[in-house]
Image (cartoon, rainbow, N blue to C red; front, side):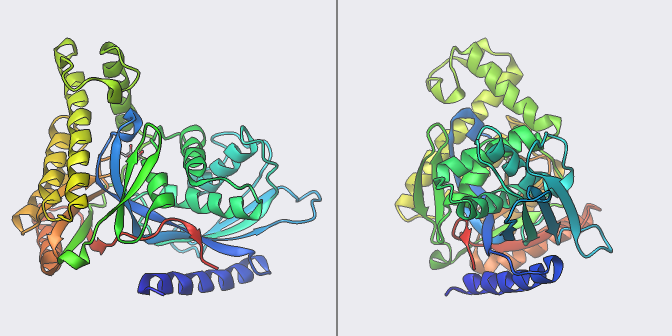
Length: 398
Ligand code: GAF
């Protein structure tokens, strides 16, 4: 068992014990779903484009027990989470599985509830009540898909307990709908796919037009490299306007160019027919798809180091053409590069969240320290810097 598997196994044991204290009996099992880092391919997923994320060694765990025997409480969903307000041990949420409407469940409870809503709604599944205890090591609001990890952990647990037989692409589409229709964030399909399809030691090359997936080796440690995440602590939300506005600009651009999606726009299409802002948005998506292909080619050739320059080019495009960076992300990227990173970029939707830097492993500490100093010198809140490694996708732990 790897050290990471062992840690998760231990966490799952502790969670099952806690579940028994909270609910008075043992759970049926414990399931895990990791967060993700996107190596490259940003704001391309909802344009039927290409992405290259990896699942990380931080995960949401859910201990779950179905309610059996029906009765008046038979469809009650009872949730508890260690994500609790300061001073409280657990945060509790209760609702009925039948007749859930968007907006009915606030806060983190909306993630499991969204999964129930989609399964019970168009999924046509009669979802019984259940008890669920959540514990997550994916930092919240850091752009590392903490919400998708909860949704994915919930769907893999319910899939197994209810014998639904969903395949991974079906689970990805289901959790995307939970996010879009219930949580209210118009996000694409990358994050849940990474959480479901990730492989240890590999990145996931995903074509979002048809979910064709390939694991591409990402031998970081073997090549003396590390990925440092800098959580800027600038909270972002994809239910806010910026993300939706970018998505709308892409749809406008595709329509003006006579295409169903930006993926269908030919490489030599003249962007001069678009207004300057839309043209910049379209240019980002187009150049980013090319950078993903270049990164995949370099990884397939066993060359991780040279992916660094593609990361830095991706950041410039996201900052200048797509305009989804922020001063904190730019500072993290610029400082990491100056401190010896081979490449760096914001990761995830932007407007806050995290940056990543590809670094020689022996520079990881120095890069993290340099970023912390730069934030302090700029009078900014202290960021959190840590390394991540590509881990396996979601599944049962015990
Ligand atoms: C967020 C979304 F959830 C993803 O679907 C993706 O669009 C990403 O932003 C930007 O690449 O993480």
